[in-house]
Length: 206
Ligand SMILES: N[C@@H](CCC(=O)N[C@@H](CS)C(=O)NCC(=O)O)C(=O)O
Image (cartoon, rainbow, N blue to C red; front, side, top):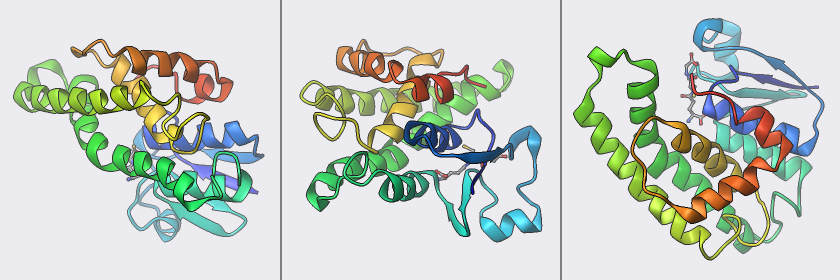
């Protein structure tokens, strides 16, 4: 049985839940992290020594790091579909996954924690503003790419859309100034038509 640990309002858990739903995999979900706690339990730390969500245990195969989990599930259950068999085609998806977890995430986290989880009087507006400007710049790169490609890896959805697509929902719902990026908006329209995305990603930011 596939088991998944992690609170549903975490973007990294949402990537995994969206993937599992997209692939129609039977699974058991356990809330963990945030107000649910449990991340410093010795049994949990044996699975993920970083004490972070998400983690999966797939009949004894334990995987942590959200993008590694998405890759594992797609390789195992979606070869030739979300996971491209050809290494060159797969690299198109891979680069956007790494881009999400390097260029994008640090700035998103600064803005998200600042605006959603920090009381107004305690906010570091300079740090939030700097991160928001960088984040908007990164989204401009994505917009340009999506002007030439329907999905991040080309003409069809791939595993590369999962981390990027999860982040697009957050970016569009943060109470911040954003440039009007038409290709990202059209991409978000396409994502919203996927029931698994609507169920697991399109939830209020908290
Ligand atoms: N790079 C890791 C980041 C994992 C991470 O920082 N998870 C956060 C939630 S998004 C966490 O566990 N926070 C502690 C908590 O929820 O209590 C991944 O992509 O899985």
